[in-house]
Image (tube, rainbow, N blue to C red):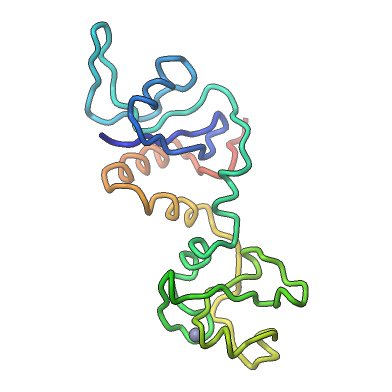
Length: 185
Ligand SMILES: [Zn+2]
């Protein structure tokens, strides 16, 4: 069965519900309403309900942690933003072989944020050492930056099956929902 995208009451991303019965539970209990459904229906003795694909909560669930997933300078997020290429020499890296480089070194007060961390191969990282790119005579292909809304969505959808992705994206587009920016009330 397919998973369900759960949006917060302000239409920001909240969670992916793995079990359809849990998603349906949110709807039946009145906690959420269906924004998009899959073609399948779920039958019980008294009810025939469409299988929820995207639901929106009726009340605001307070959450900081979930947003933070795509705002932290983790390997997954940094590598994904940089398209798995070393930002100094351009060589392709993998999750294991690649490293995170702090453009302004941590030892000199550089922050561990997306605006200071880039993808680097081991060689370039070692060569740069405790220096800035200009001190090391190295050129950055792209300056470090936060993810765009589209990139956050892509990051999120990477783990999702094709049909789920297509259904969710169509729904988000139709409703003009950008997952991480609150819609004007
Ligand atoms: Zn490199």
